[in-house]
Image 1 (tube, rainbow, N blue to C red):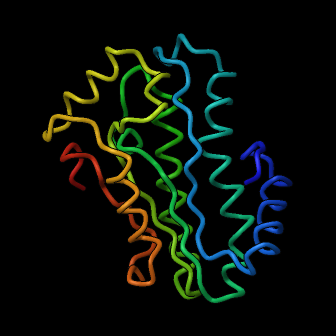
Image 2: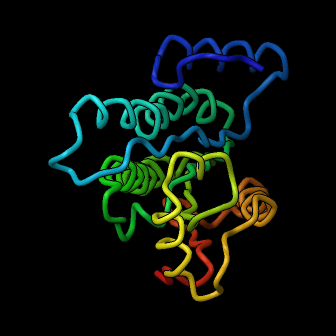
Image 3: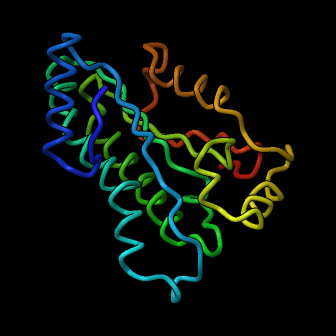
Length: 191
């Protein structure tokens, strides 16, 4: 394991090089780093807060996809899974930095999936609704209640449910899907 700034291209390249040395190749990249950021109306938030959330939620995905793409292309195989959010599809009030950066991850994934389509490498993303993780510590109870109220199943998602979907997307069996957005929102978003 390496600890560093996911938005730093030098760190990303070091991770790719070290992982390739240790395991011989990189077949799977899951971009899961994300933060919620401060909550408030757009006009109440400092632009530095937007920059902070952007660095982790979007730039980190961009940097790691960029760092690993050529390696995967050269080996004619790879699976990239970016963790976005239903907030990137629908937006959540008082969460502009989070929602907009997750929308950017969705757009990046769609474009990258098409760029890689003939290489044996796929790029897909998942858009979970609210999931029981430490990320919830960054939101108010009012926001959590709002998000859960939008889920027809009536509960938060479980990490194991997301992990099962990611495992399938990373498998060789998932070879005819690239640039796709896989919903896992308990029925909140069905597109």
